[in-house]
Length: 246
Image (cartoon, rainbow, N blue to C red; front, side):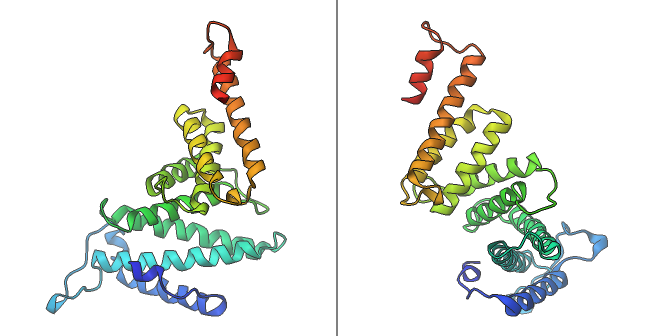
């Protein structure tokens, strides 16, 4: 599926047409409705080629459709007028479809497939975008989206070579889950990925000083939370807070 990533970026009517074509191609490959999307189906065509319904062909079709939908969602978000209810509804529908298609792709890929990390990152990013939907009329944030985003982003990212965008998503998603669920592992991971984000010149668009302030606030909140549950040293909460900050 590496060739899919390297294809030219489309926009406008060309992108719309490509999505329609990709949808039709995927629909033709999937089993009949009564067989369910999870039915194995498919066959190897004469001569060793892949035929309709073959899992590899279905995976490639899903990868292409998911990539195109993700592209259209990104373009729509960049120029979105929140007062245009139709445009907002279309973008949300595209994002939901991209999540469904990419989720199905990740489910069927072997765990050791080279494409798994990138697919997991895409699905995690889309899930976090749905959780933090900024457009008018959004549903209440679904904690399941946030949980999926954190787990998928962590699954796909490697600390040493994660790009700035992925690192920003991880920092923000883990921070939000930590605030929601107060998980000690997330508290540590927030600081880890926040420090990694500092290595980028613009700190993911947050700015170096802005990110420093956010990290300091996270440390203070963590120390306060430990203090409230009685995790104090022999000299009280203050030494513990200083240790956390240092």
